[in-house]
Length: 174
Image (tube, rainbow, N blue to C red):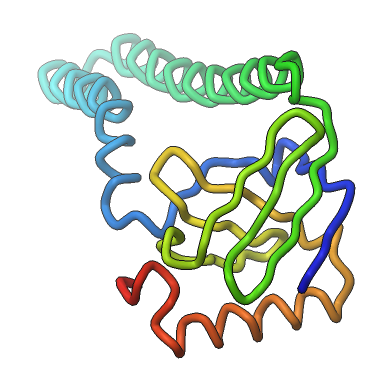
């Protein structure tokens, strides 16, 4: 049994999951990218229609730059607002305890707990700074590596390899 107590992921560790669900991530981004494609197309048409007008090209360039900066700023503001909202939730600031064993994982705080068998987990993704347990596209618990000892990280890797080898992870759909 792997036990990790006092888990509290940082905003960076709670970043969106971009791999593990096929092309779902890209379809989610498509709706965000559509306005940019339209704007860039309009800019190319404006520049092509008036190649000698330097003021127009400069204006179009500034609008494009402002749009890109606005996109990055809005993403940063969204991340901050999401983290602030999560922390204001009743269980948002509480530390969680994790228990991971051959049957599945059990994690939770003082006010909520969850148990998931390995059959209910699509995959476990190891990233540079975290382990992500893919339960569903909108539910992927995160276990930060910084809060684990090296033997715990090795034990989790071994356990996941064993569960995959025996076809118990996601009932063998991974």
